[in-house]
Image (cartoon, rainbow, N blue to C red):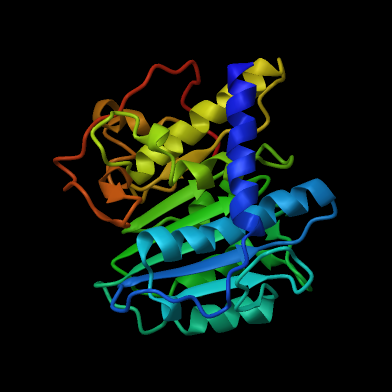
Length: 298
């Protein structure tokens, strides 16, 4: 019951942010080297539409109000009839290409975050992100990212079968987060927990006063585990994180000090400022007991 109350509080907090009106022209301090592209997909299920749109809306507010991103560096792309606030462009293929074309001037002094929340289909060996008009495949997304040269790239795909993109998107200086493995084609709840986790004090797993991207991911996984366990359901989504460049994401990246694999880079990003809070060698291990086994399927 406590976990259900916590889940309700998370959704209520998310909804309160989503209903707040946000102007298209965000007012933020200038000078940030962080660039963000938020992409809202389309969906036939009304409840899921509201869930994903809330996530995109709240992410925009988080990057503006908490992280302090320069308004010129934030693109919020969504369907014209969506509930997303602060839309700066359409999430059509043309709109996404246009937004990415403005990122070609990024240098290693810049950071870039790409976040997709929506529905997707797996057709053969292709992950097709559902957007207005023609879908965007994971191969096309990889091609759009290829010419960009930020010092750090973070990509979050919250959609069914997201792990199918792992090999195509892998590369140096990249943190890649997938809401589900490639063999999990059903709707995901990842953003319902991950977006609040970027702001909730409870996400500071090791209690040192700084929440890292890795800790937000770990907290999210724990909440989703609890949700399925409380409902006595077989788990249909296993989130993955990959930041080693080997194209093999981990289900338990918080054990990176033991495994020597994914998680070390995500453990250096403080989510309240999106700045480095530790060097890779100083990153604090936040290992928590888990009954989930390391996955071998991206």
